[in-house]
Image (cartoon, rainbow, N blue to C red):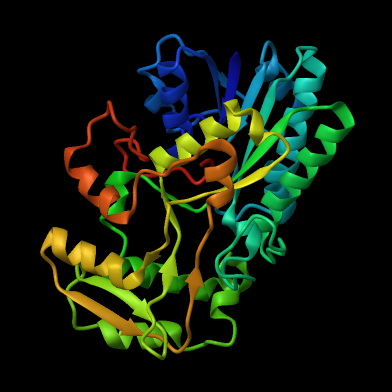
Length: 353
């Protein structure tokens, strides 16, 4: 087995490289040219690092030489100032170029695992609670649409060239050292600020028809300290919910999709065993860090919940970390357990999982 991991310096990517190396598997790490996060891979002395732009077929072809398996994690997560066609080119046609690179390499492909996203389900207005893999994928935003296009391209190319594949759809991936920053006053302030992006935001359906969310939140939290544990509730007091996945569980899901025979031709949700309610998240932060807790009433309900039963049954995916365990494990974490999401600069990449 010789595995190409794209986006190898990312939150999931670096830890995926770590897992494969620990299993004694040959790995090739693909990063973008000039990747500021590449230092995370320095510990893997025997892992070749190749620079390739997903928009450049020649460099992608070179990266695919000798490869029997692909874990495709590279993607641009935040569009920012990137032109729409370039954004789609990276996330959708980049997948096509990798598939073409594999076909051109002449080495029989044994498995192509594509990292997709709960963004393909339209997370700002989920079509079902909980979300199972067979619900309609109608994302309605740039990122979710680009990931769905990647899924379609993979399925079609797999049929055309008889390529074995699996797809993993991640919930919000959290590295343990990041977990304690969630469910804080300024975390939700930043999320609600996305309303100012209009339909550029992947959560724009959440804000649609709700012009006062930022004002409501600001008025409720203006007098509380920044480190206050905060959760959101609907008009009846029902707490909002959010599906998260610890990066270690994300790696486990990808690994299972890579090696389990039952993963073939199937898409799997990869998340924690249960969603985190805002009431629980805020209570955990308040308890562990000794900070005040505040629940803020919002004018509507919101539940984003991924079901992982298919992955449990088909590929023996057994998520090991709920939100409390993410936060608590960060206290005793070492580089032997998980590679942090960010480099010393403190800036996490927006270019890969």
